[in-house]
Image (cartoon, rainbow, N blue to C red; front, top):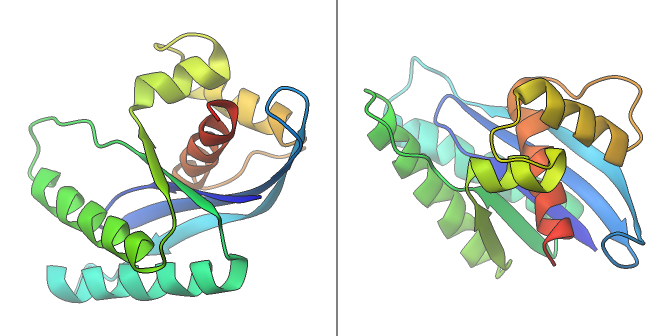
Length: 158
């Protein structure tokens, strides 16, 4: 099974694709691809959303994931909150268009699944991602690593 993890954003959408076999805890998982969808800050929000949808469609067509795991947006007061929520809507719409089942997890649940406690530090989660995917170097940028953490959580919580 191919799982797509997504860390939503407007300027940068982190993505991570893993392939899993067997059952969680007794199966194997490996990294297929990870990175970011970067949008042009010089464009309008609408144009940036079109970029996100287009690039996500390309990823879906290339890897054909059977499950998507989206980090649930954690609300806070910021000037970017509405933009991130709108970008998340574009992501969810695109996934629905391809009929890909979606599960969502808040950051604390992802940290708990990977590092053993919901208030884990970013480095602890990164170390767990590297261990679970047998990586020698950390996935970069951080948004991609966060997306891989989401994908792994989706696998572990099955």
